[in-house]
Length: 173
Image (cartoon, rainbow, N blue to C red):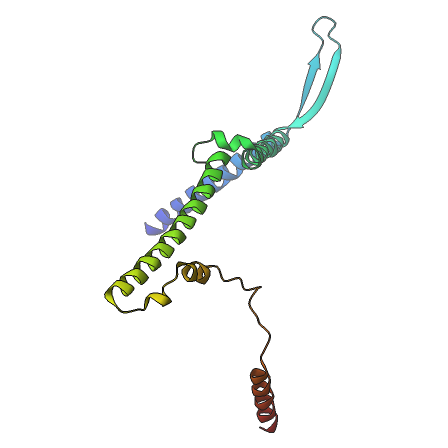
């Protein structure tokens, strides 16, 4: 009895396999069967345009067209001012204002630091920690505005001698 049941299951599997194969063949036949698209003049029945198509060609052309439309739309939105009308994108005016406000806040922060240094130096003088002669507001401003190009970066004679000394020691080793 068990062999009959197994045989019956095997027969059902082969039938389903052949049914699947038949369905695939029908679908393949429908996809690749040739059809003709004809445009006629309704008054004279003159053939204006004729095109041989398969369903697969229509799917391929439709897919390529959809991808191109998506690509062009994305390109237009990303690289033109139209992106400002989409929620989530900041306008160029808003970006400019943000940059200006950032620069202003940075300069205000630097001014606050200078003022705090000046107040601290005045507190030290009032407490007697510093002499009045050492307090100079210009020195605080100058300390912030050191120009690296104006600084003297030429080595002194002592530095040149030290360099020669180090070079000679490294050559000996």
